[in-house]
Image (cartoon, rainbow, N blue to C red; front, top):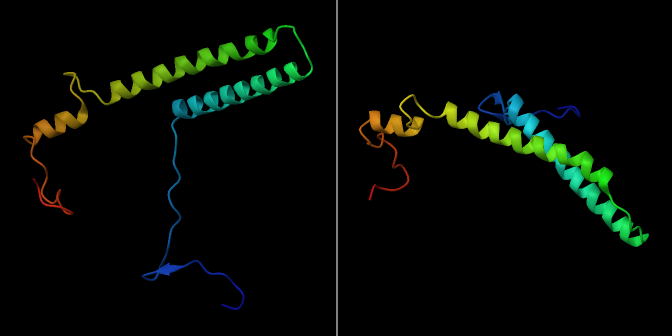
Length: 120
C-alpha cells in the first residue's frame, strides 16, 4: 500500500514469472547464424535496390562472398542438430524413446489419459 506496487498474490504466495526458455549451445549458435544470415539477405536486398536506383551495373560479389560461408555454416549446424536430436532420442535397438516406452507398457494408455473425453 502507500504508493507501493505489490505483486499479485494467489493463495498467500507470490505469482512467479513464467520460466524462460533456455537454449543449449548448439541451438543458440544455430539461431544466431540464422539471424545473421537473415540480416545478410535483407542487406543484400537493400543493396540490390540501391544498385538499381543508382544504375550501378557492376557485380555485388563482395556481398555474395561474405555471406556464402554463413549459409554453409547454417546448413552444417542445422544438420548436426538434427543428427544430435536423432541420436539422443533413439535407443540402442533403433527404436525411438516414446515408442520403446509405449512398447514397455504394452501399448496401453495410462489411466487418466482421457480426462476430457471418453476413449473411442
